[in-house]
Image (cartoon, rainbow over all chains, first blue to last red):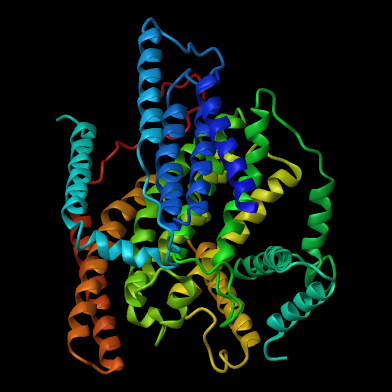
Length: 163
Length: 399
């Protein structure tokens, strides 16, 4: 009973915050609502007994991405005012794209026969995760790190002072 | 007597169960009581710490410090507390009310949340989660967010400047901090704080002194006090991100800062000074709690001593120290420790040889890094400015 109440609350907070992100006229408020939405998703991961994913969600999405967004907004002039224009000429296409994506996702969620594991989640998932990442899935893991390294080098080249 | 905390816990548990409460409710009440207790102890410690800090600062600066309220001024903090509770809240014009009020709460919460996972003694452990180390790092992000919120919502240029400095500093110093934290994780093969504490035979400060040093420096930067107090530099930014705060809202930032310093002391204790371990700590868990708080207090005083002795560093020096020294050194250290640990695992060595090799290797890396840094530093060309004329009375040709 208690997990269902907590699930309901965090789902409500996540969805409400996500709605506030798109409807709010002040872009900085949107950014802070985004933080709330990320935190709600993290609490859902905790409920799913995936502590590692939950902590990483907080660490990366709130600790890095959200702070970067807020900082970028703070450094941009006249963007933090309340009279932000929220749509442009292409909003109809964007709405259609979003609706299409929603339909596809909804169809997938309903049609796929999701595997259900009946056994209890092992308490120490992180050791297994680490071993799997460095043995079975070592190539995707390394490819991801090379990709991030390339992005890092690219950002340095873009941000470098021209001589 | 030996196991006072669990004794009380069992007493309350039996009492509640005797009253007919269900096991789930009893567990919930006990956990709630435990977290309230941890938080209250934190606040009680901060009240004392503020007095200790001010007295220490006074002595180090050749003055008396607080000496009016009570013997040796020990009631000074209580007087300050009453004063700050009765002060008016002033909200600046044009401030974002919501964010302005949430920011101090978030700053306080982000520090207190770290205490949730601490092991206080052999059998007095908070939430002993498997991702304890990551949790500590993740929760710290809310502190940065609180500073950003405070700086932006105050509608004050100084506050905004302080907040934007905080990003440059806090986020970049998180990198060496996390890399240094990986070393105790690597040595103890776990991210669970209780396992890290129990794995310290001897303390990790002897096995990985360089990681301890890097962690101490970068977490001192995370506290945001001198010598890294660029985000609230009094002489430049009034008070930085909390310029516009008054009354208890300012008080929460202030207490959060003090508590953060004590928390860093506790973190260094857990990761490098053996946490609650000490003579007789396993047989007498109450001693473990005393050791834990004692070691944390010692580190707290050392940090205070350092920050009272050093002037504020410039922003470019601050970034140089981080990006050109701490981050490369911490990466080299991590790789070296990982390789050495794995290689020595192959040979069954006596523990003291292992520790000696590790200690020597750390010292060598530190020496090499310092030598390289010194060599590079000489190559940096300092920009020479022509001497500027001193103040000239008006009307006189300044040539």
